[in-house]
Image 1 (cartoon, rainbow, N blue to C red):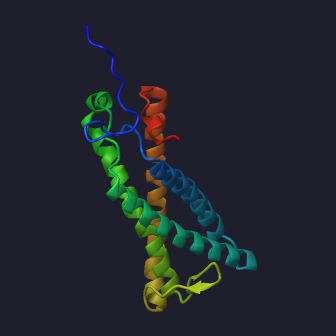
Image 2 (spheres, rainbow, N blue to C red):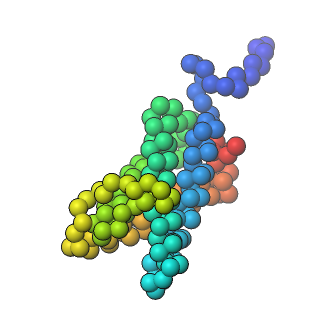
Image 3 (cartoon, rainbow, N blue to C red):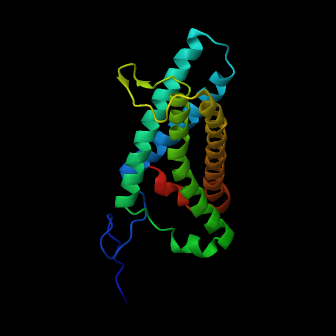
Length: 193
C-alpha cells in the first residue's frame, strides 16, 4: 500500500501551477472592471450635447484610457514573464477543439485590443487637435499630426475596436459562466483570490 503524498501548495519545477498568481488576478480584475467602466462612460458621453460635463467626461475618459494602456503593458509584461497555468488535464480532454480555439483566440484578441483601443483613441485625440493632458498635469505628446481629415478617418475605428473588445469581454464572461454553472469544473476558481 502506498502512502498518500499531497502536492506542494506552491508550484515547483516538477509541479505545474494550478492557479494564476495574485498579481495576475489583481491585474485581471482591475482591468476587467475598469474596461466595463470606461466603455460605459464612452457610450454615455458620445451622445451628450457640448457642455462642461461632456468636456469633463472626455478628459476623464482619456485619462482612464492612458491608465488602462499602462496597466495593459504591465499585464502583458507579467504574462510574458509568468507563464499562466495550463488548463487542467480533465478540462483539456473534455473541451472540444473549437472551444480550445475560441479560448486562445479570445485571449489573444483581447490583448491586441487592450493596446489598439487606447492607441487609436490617442491618435484620434491628437489628430483632432485635443492633446491629452494626463490628470490635468502632464501633456502627452501628440501621437499623430493635427489633421481634420485624419481625425475623421480614425474616429470610427476607436468605436469599432471598443465595441469589438466589449463583445470579446462578453464572450469571455459567457465562457467563464459556462465553466462555473454548466460544466461545474472549477476552472473559474483559478482566477479568484
